[in-house]
Amino acid sequence: MMETALKTVKRYPKYKDSGLDWLGEIPDVWYTEKGKWLFSKEERPTRKEDEIVTCFRDGQVTLRRLRRTDGFTNSIKEHGYQGIRKGDLVIHQMDAFAGSIGVSDSDGKSTPVYSVCTERVNNSVDNYYYAYLLRNMARVGFIESLAKGIRERSTDFRFNDFKELILPFPPLPEQTAIANFLDDKTEKIDRAVSIKEKQIALLKERRQIIIQELVTGKKVWNEAKQAWEKPENTKDSGVEWIGEIPEEWEVKKMKHLLRIKNGQDYKHVLSDSGYPVMGSGGQFAHASEYIYDGEVVLLGRKGTIDRPLYFNGKFWTVDTMFYAIVNESYLTKYIYYISTTIPFKYYTTSTALPSMTQDDLNNNKVVIPKLEIQKKIVKQIEFQSKKIDQAISIKEREIDKLKEYKASLVNDVVLGKVKVTSE
Image (cartoon, rainbow, N blue to C red; front, side):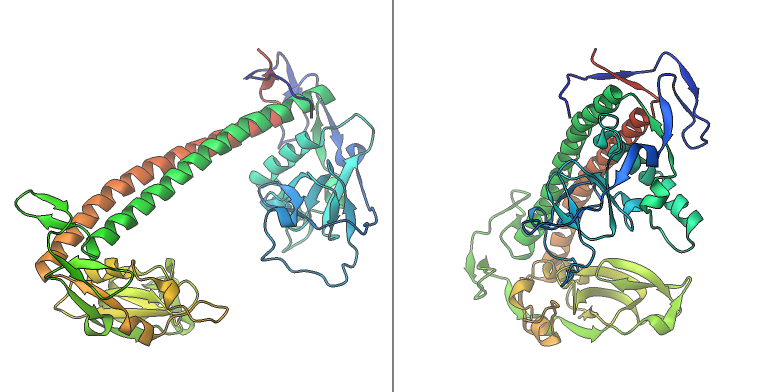
């Protein structure tokens, strides 16, 4: 694409009816055209040196090895594979509804599930403009609705569907200007979003540091100074990952603090409403019965094992989870917070699916202060967490606004609602 110094947008001087409900009015200097008169579907043979190209849902079309190699099904004989060249417009027929449409940045090869498109007439279309246009059509649900209208229970968007679509057809210089403008603007928006996401990650990391410091006694409450600071008198905990602890704190195995119970299969109690069914990510369904009523710490047994949860009330939990009932001498919330600091990687079994046993958890050593200190620590953690949650919430709202602005900008520019200028 040509590089230009595009900076602003404004309305076109005159508009006309496109004749399409989904498109509405378009600039007077634009036309509409069926996809088949703009693009041809390529069916190139592959070459020995070709590597696999993948079209991702964020619109990037690149060599698979440059992004990730796991999570894919690899064909042994590569039946029907086709050649892709840098600059081709690529449409993932089965995933286009989710945004898997873009311009390849590399030469390579792909499965036949991709529609590889090139301009039918030289110097007539800018593939980058049409990638933005089609991804916008996917975002608003147009492609999914189209596919469902053609083939029941299918979201496929094949070239035969694409070629019959009537699309906006701006003059080529405007297509290129739009694509360049959106490259610049969306890259800046994405960068701003990335910065805020990193800030959120740092805030979450800061929360975990606070928890770690407090539940392992690296900071204790100094009543005289009314402040949290390093303890004066310490001793060796005997636990490598904990190190020194306040002299009056105790080291205990978790089996002396709680009773661990296995979750159970939930399918026979599934319901449209009722009690929460808890997994490693929190509630995901409802149950007609409950497995326990009260305060517990939920711990992963298989799969996601490093995200303990606190729950209080009636619930059901799945058979890949444990639920721990804390003894009355200890504070359940405190045990939950200390559970978030367990070095799970040391206990994970060598199987492909991460897993923990009751013995692993029961024999894990933790440090315990007196009950009144546990209460003070929980209060401080929740006070700090509230402030961090508020900061995270602000960042998340800012991210949502940036994403909304990006979507609105792309929609307005690719559909000609506003005109890109170099003013």
